[in-house]
Length: 139
Image (cartoon, rainbow, N blue to C red):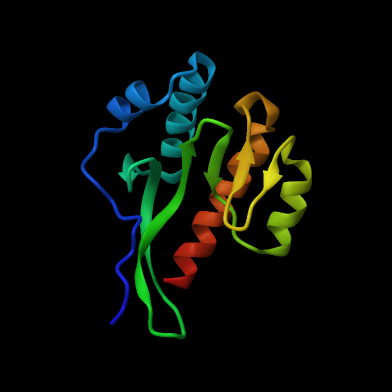
């Protein structure tokens, strides 16, 4: 039996989530700025995915194993230690952009950044747009 995805779109209000979950003023400002930027870049309204991820748009995926589901195109989570940015796909073009992005750490499935001012926002936009195009081409 296939496992259900844990991270699915919810009806939680994004603004309410940020105001209640984020306890650092700068992180709150950065969160609302990311909402504005990612909405603009994706052309999609923010939606909560699971309890703590803010996502923009969605796509359907299906693995060779037969597992399939829906996920956000791009998104982020304002975690206590750092923002988790769900924005990158493994392409040679993205690696060149990552080299110019700024101060961050790379995780297995996301980018960790302490504050938005550590990043080059023009490069962040290019990565987000490239990610959206790549994911749309797969679905």
